[in-house]
Image 1 (tube, helix red, strand yellow):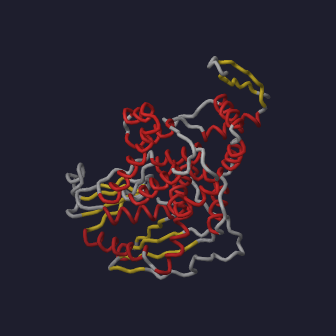
Image 2: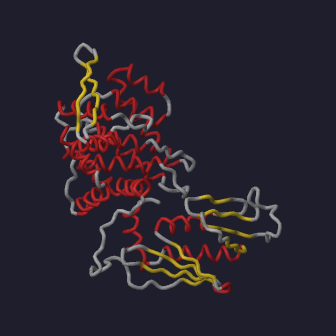
Image 3: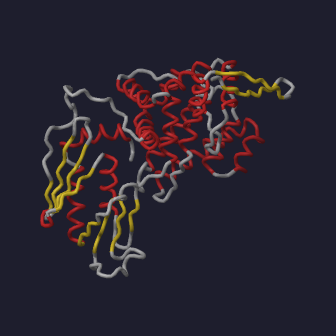
Length: 392
């Protein structure tokens, strides 16, 4: 059954005229997918009629092909990002639509906080800011509205953004000044804030900036593709809940994945590793004296477990996506009856198994996991999984 969509257009006298049209379910579904490209500054969805209006306006500006290609790519984002990776590895140029899809998932990768306090890293955010400047330098027109958006997002100050709209062309250097100061802070100040809206700016720049050419975009962003793709892969995992990888046929070799990985033994702890037919890494934690076997995987869970055992200190707690952990000195925990002094405990969310370690056992667990995560045999697989899942 056809659905009615209302499109509001403004004429040259700024008077609104209303046009109502009937569209098929297929067209309506297309407009809903296209709407993902047109989030407002608060990240809220816009109406279908607003999407149709933007598509008509961009058709006048000869940018409709890019919008339509972007919408088609977003119908299967996993395949789209796989295609982007293949082009990157084959040293081929990306289309403007492919850059836009990459930017949309960079936004998702920045907007969502990490369980690991160091991911995405400050250096990754610094490189994203450098990429933003590189894109902006390709523009061939004055764009105060975009500069207002960038500065307001980065500084959190609407007043500073308003200065750009009022100061005219001479305000064009406000954005580079703000961005360069943030880059310097990220690289030199350990406590510098990694502002999540950096990703939104990257996405809007790739989507909306009127640039010299897509060739120039490929030229200036080529060196930033490693960080852009890792953050986009992270965003894809958080939004789509699946890694970016080609489904392997049963008879195909695993490639970079080793058939056998040596176990790591540290005191009472053993960590064994294996890779399944899909190229997914799993580990088995063995506490030998307790005859306890604890499975770990897939890769995002392994990354969180590694961060947890590495960073958890007396008096602290860990509350991540997969695990909750605490020590005997943690707030609200130290008074528990029967808790042995100097203990570390963790449990997996949704499971009733709590495992307690002495300080010495926890140190052995930490050492074992640091060794297994740095095994030379696993590094090619780790690099491949980092591209499949991103900075998680």
